[in-house]
Length: 366
Image (cartoon, rainbow, N blue to C red; front, side, top):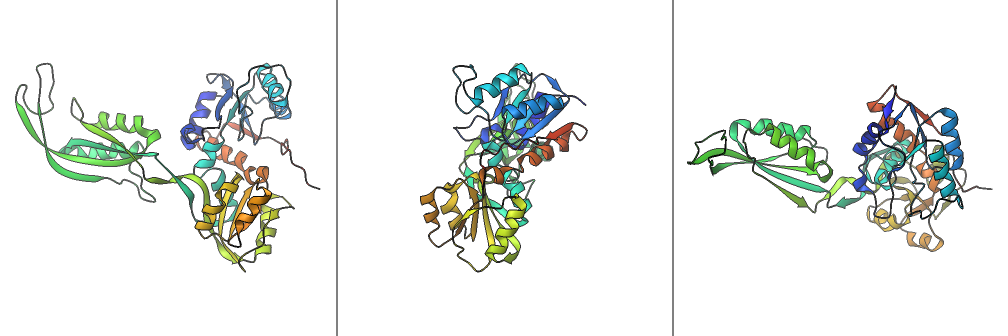
């Protein structure tokens, strides 16, 4: 089975839209032509020269990685460092490179979501939900067509609030209008003011779906000119944000938890602070560099925070209120390959996805 790179990207970005990446990030298609067709993709955490060689050997025309090979602008391509050499090799080998980084961190079922799943966490919620990502549409519809317009908006992805869907608010009233000479009114007569019983429908939706929602509403609406308003909301959204907090089904002793974590991450060595509870129940996670979430984890009442790249003085921020475990950057993000595979194969079950066998972790342990 062949797919265009664009088709693959559409599925990845429907799952983790690029709009959710941090300002410093460089997620997206980094090398390649989105219109090219590929027989298979290679999934990796990082892209290195060895990963490019692996893709060529396997005949994979595209690499999907968590970390972008390019973070900053390249002014020259002379092969003077590993970034330039990797990009040059990818271009010469006709291998496309795509990265889903902080956008994949931000969605609740992304990098942290699959880590929470591996840990067996329940009642999981976003540790620090992001605000400013939601909008609300108000649309005025004749009563007999209100249900059709609502259903169209719901089908386009609007109307989700927490664990509820098909959410809307509806107010009955009367709309007035006068059709001009060049109009083709659905109701009323040209040149005469008409009053029509209407329903004002209010529905919340993610900003990334705005075009789809508006198009769906207009298509389902019977009027020649559709009256609607779109408002930006400051509400935090529980589906997107930083880190997750969840509960273990059964509380465990701190060292038993550490032993279990070691087995899950296949990592025998952790840096950690002294446990502050006799049992671990509430667990906060932030895959990759997440020391900036220490205070949020404490505020959520977590017994332990699992993250990486914690500096010496940041361990003091535990302040006898939480146990901090630095479990390794690569280690806490290693399941991203599995996540990519799940997203792609849900849509394209017969498309070939391969996991990179190259260990790109630059950190060794003795």
